[in-house]
Every structure is written in C-alpha cells, then in structure tokens.
Image 1 (cartoon, rainbow, N blue to C red):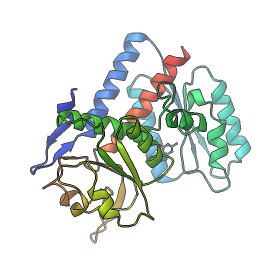
Image 2: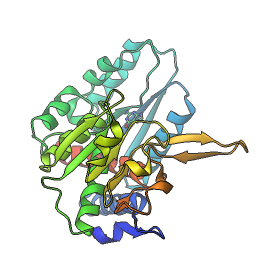
Image 3: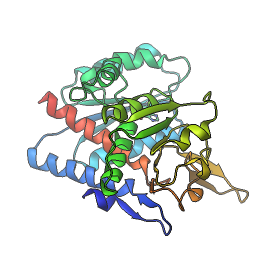
Image 4: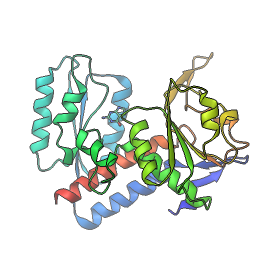
Length: 300
Ligand code: GUN
C-alpha cells in the first residue's frame, strides 16, 4: 500500500486516515515475511485477572499473532496472583528461546508494582517498549536498537503517511501532543522530535489548551477524555491523529466508541484525521506484531 491509499474521502474537506487498511497492509507484509524466511516469531501475552476490556485486547493480540504465522501463547493468571509468581512467569518466558516478545497486559491489580514487572522483562523481548532501557534508547535517539511503544509508533506511521500523501514535509512543523503518559504522550513526543518537528506536550494543567492546539500543524490527542478537543480548536489544514478510545453510552443504552476529538466538528476544515474506531487503534496491534518480528530477527 502506498501513502496515498491510506487517505479516503470523508464527504467534506477532511481526508480520513485509514488506520485499519494501513494496519492490514503491515500485518500482511509480516505474514509474507514469516512465510518467506521461515522465521517463527513467538509472542507471549500475560493477562492477570479477568478485566473484560483487557480480555478483549489480549484475545485480539493472540488472534493477530496467529494470523501473521507467529507462535502465540497466552498466560492467564488469577487476579490475586502474587508478584513473585508473576515475576517467575516473566523469568521463564525470558529464558524461553521460542518466545521473542513478552507483553504483560496493563493495568495490573493494585498489589502488583507494574514498574517491577516491566523491569523484569528482558529488554530484547520488551515488545511493548516500556522497559527503561528501551525508553532511554528512544529518548537518546538510538531508534535502531530500541523497541518503541506500539501506540505512538503506529501513530507516527499514520502521520508520516498522511503528510506524504498531502505532499508535506514534517520538518520544522509545529506538533502538539495532548497527554503526557509514559505509554503514549512521552514516546510520541520523542518520535516527533526525531522527525525534526517542533514539539509541544500539552496536558491537563496546560493553560489555554485551545490556543496551544490552534498553533499546531499536527495534533496527536491522547488524553482519554471523550471529544474533549473541539473542532474550533484545530488550525485549518491540520493533520489530526486521535489516539483516544472512549466508550459512551447513549440515552438508548447503546454504547459507541468515540475519540478524544469531536470528530464531526473537524471535517469541514482539517486536512486529514483518523476516525475512531478504525484509525490509530488497529495500528497498535500491527506495531506489536512488527516489534515481535523485529525481536525475532535480532534473536536469530
Ligand atoms: N493496556 C492498554 N494498552 C496496553 C499496551 O499497549 N500494552 C500493555 N502491556 N498493556 C496495555
């Protein structure tokens, strides 16, 4: 798929950035590489407890790993599992030569320290890109050796593809990342900085967020608040990547997914935007597969 193919009409001025199609192209390519090379990447996903949302995410990660021809294992542990037992599973997976990627699904129950668990994962198998060594490599610009967090890595692919399809260079452009989480906001800012963009990280304490967002040629919304970013905040012609996935329940009791951006308000003036669902979300799993494939290649 070339860059132009990820953009499709919205019926108004904005083009829609088709993350579902971009993710499908990436996973199809990985599946073909697996078939061609005979490499068997192995992904282990550890789920503690039975949170319904986490169960859905973990299941779709396993299904996609299978679809790519990977070896895929899921380790289910009870919600009251001790930290020591969980760390024992991580140590076993670290030592297993058939496993190249380990992902411990977050959030973990309150009695388990997530930092201890992340620190215990071998950096070479840390396909989430959460280990301090991978975080440090990304921050110091050693992207060739870093495993990069999947959601920002996927958003970066979409931003680059949208810019290329619109005939724009990202270099020197103003980008505002809304949200400063370790999982999305901070690594996203690092990736954008490496593209020579002028990066602002805005957050819940930012004064006059609307004015800050208004400056941006590119906006990445990762706050986790439904439709918080209004259409009038966005500069005409902006590229918008909405990382938020929020479930809203309507008066009829039916639920629907919305992003952090009030999507319908943007369509008459932004240049391109990711829909929710079908935008940044599918890219996260595709990048997890890519990281697992990369980890397997390095191990071989
Ligand atoms: N929970 C929600 N998103 C993620 C993710 O990307 N990785 C892990 N490990 N847990 C999550």
